[in-house]
Length: 141
Image (cartoon, one colour):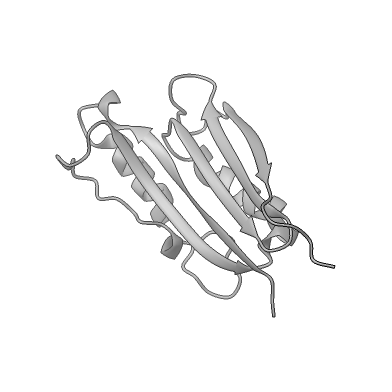
């Protein structure tokens, strides 16, 4: 059986920073700028729930852009996946981003990006990342 990896998480932006929809529009454009799924996309439009630009009264103050995908052993090319994700983040407004990587062999890794200021502004490069690892179960011999 092939090794399956599950990648999921969310990007959060504080929607109360601006009363107009310019932040939402820029974030939406960045997500729509991702390639369509074909062949081996590390990051593609189809893995994201792309929000609408219009302000929804159901949102309180945080816009949550969630995503998820199943891969065949993506951990062997994880540096490339992270590079693509950080490239996407560099084009967006956000307060924090979290990625969970669940692997069959090496457990679960949680990566968290935070802005050095209150919010990340596209092109500013003020990202800080940390990783936490957890592994449940035991090896059977």
